[in-house]
Length: 303
Image (cartoon, rainbow, N blue to C red; front, side):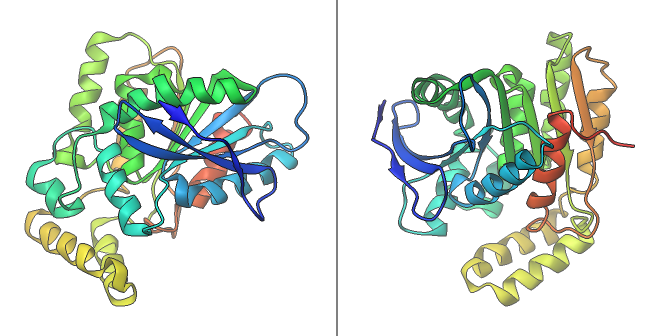
């Protein structure tokens, strides 16, 4: 494992990045870090973001606005991304490796392409054994107050981590998690956890958009094909697969997942699902981040 020196991000206040080589994954990650405004003595919470190349500036802005308004505490925001200059396609190929927890067979190849490999275990070890110690050496981070945010496939990784290594983070915010993965394999993970464990110490916020039902999801996918040439071929393949094998559930799965975990009556589990009206798979992350951060930091409670 080796880390480069930090580079200031031009135009983003109190934000920088460094590249970190992972021996466990066998690849290099770009780590984006936003420092709390008015940094003082003491340690700060940290919010970890998957898909850091895109999610970092969004989450940094939302977190800072909420902190400035006193709605959540100041915190470090850490985006985990990739040092690729090849654009969107290259980053997607790597996320399809790092966020996939199990082999998905023909489903995975149809939906994600040949870049889909079950690399989540190695990626999780990278977070725990390589990234976290590096950050704690460089920044005044509270190792006992870590939040994970992931959307879509990264939300699947978050759900898998919650049910396999929950102490990795103390708080989880999952936006439209792809827990339909591999014929809803998530229920096997949940059942195994409940047999082996008596508690699940975490604060968890789960959400999806109301426009992520099968009918609305197909309609939105057709719009993407018509308007985004970059994604057209991949989305067309997904549409064909889902039309033949059945469209995944997203809007419906989020509350089912939460209800199943709540029914276990884990003493230290705080969990809530709040699906967002009028949001699609692509539009929902900002709304989930805003509501989710306030929920896991105990600044908003559902009515």
